[in-house]
Length: 399
Ligand SMILES: [Zn+2]
Image 1 (cartoon, rainbow, N blue to C red):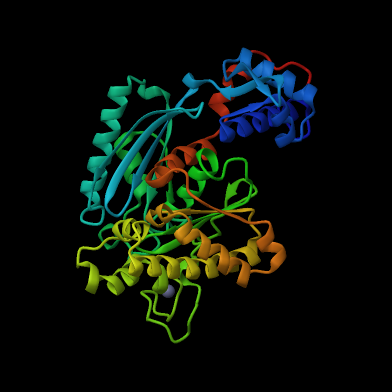
Image 2: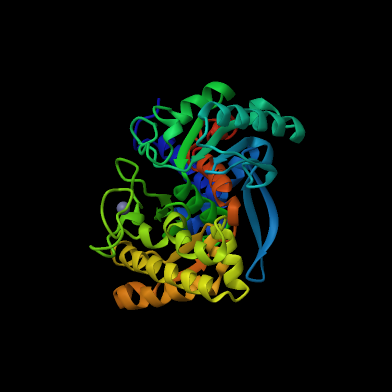
């Protein structure tokens, strides 16, 4: 029997701490595990040996700072994770293992808002196809991470704002996909997944506090605090698009005036340039033209950067993140947008908060969300099956 505080429950808690640290980091040396879990080097060494004997982790020789070290990662064949990302105009699926290796990835254009049934049908087909082409066993799939371009109500699992994805009204996307695939599905919005993706695979590696800003048809932020996504009780944390910048500014879709979104989101920005640049102008094209030196596009990209920077300054004062990662098409503009963001941050944030902040472009581009969906499963999945091997091998007395 396990009671809190007993030797065996303490032991299990330590096993879980080590597995969780490795699960999120991909691979860590034993010294890094000790640092991130607060366990002693001797305890980590014992636990790693036990997990290795149980088949949960793999240990490979490596070097850290010129010294020989042992790198610990979850066994690649311990489980498979799948990510499904619905963007407004695309569907992307990735298959990975618990050792953070991406085994296959595929994307296709999709008008996600047109019909949720078609969207789920295409996602199901793509997942089934990738399972076959990678030759993985279905039984190994521990979960699917699902990204949707709209806020998710944490309590009900349904889409929180129907104005963003009207074709999906009343749908519980997690239940729907889980019913089709027969595995647990974890759901989150695109900004939170972008934050997780960059945290685990991209520009946020090694950072505990991070804000991922995505400027697309709206503006959202995914917030990572102490290594975990902060969603708030209703799941709407990070809605920085509706920070008021100008009381007498344009009317926003939320009903207020002069929200950050009305100065930065594609639907408000593109009409400024269309008269001279054609009606089919996209944000991607604006960024490309800005890079080629088009003065109008450069001006608009810089203005967007300054306004995003005001929002980031507010975030800085509130949360003091050590890193802000810019995602979406806009990140491709590089310094053309990053420099104005930094300028606004240094102007509007309190100096102590601004000093500690690094603003970087995302490293993953359009893959941030689907890789974040893989990371979501790694973050949310339980450890029971992973620990089975180690625990049935017989828990020794040490902790
Ligand atoms: Zn608004």
